[in-house]
View 1 (cartoon, rainbow, N blue to C red):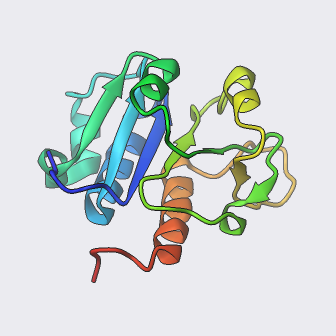
View 2 (spheres, one colour):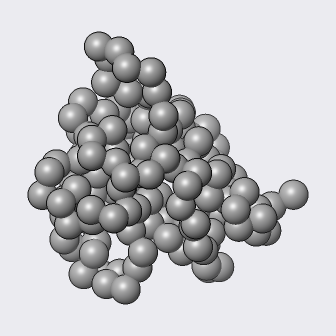
View 3 (cartoon, rainbow, N blue to C red):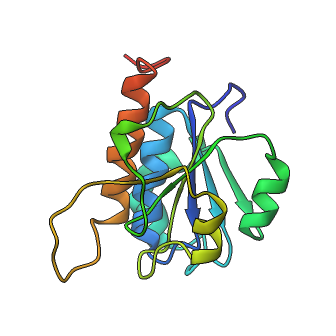
Length: 161
């Protein structure tokens, strides 16, 4: 586990696909972001698909698993929280000003974030722009990478070469 302050906190709400979580974990290691997982998970963290996608980076991952979204918020009550969602977003991801330590929450692959969570943060819902189609959204791990790298660009890539 890392001892330094994470650049950002990446939160996956009830992730369903182990390969996405593995890829996101790898991104978190290489960008000094902490990964938060909100239960229930659609897989076991020991599954080989998670480890394979995360390669040999998994032991270096700063990860915390929470019983619920409310559990996570109660542990970090004064944190700034952004919700990445395709529903009712006020801003495109690059239009907000990120700060070190911000929490960026991403929803389930199949259904996104539930309305009760979205309704708690009406002013910090962000989206990655896409054309209007009959499909839902970009792949979760791609979306995380897009948003995280924009936030880190704004922060001038702290601690990164």
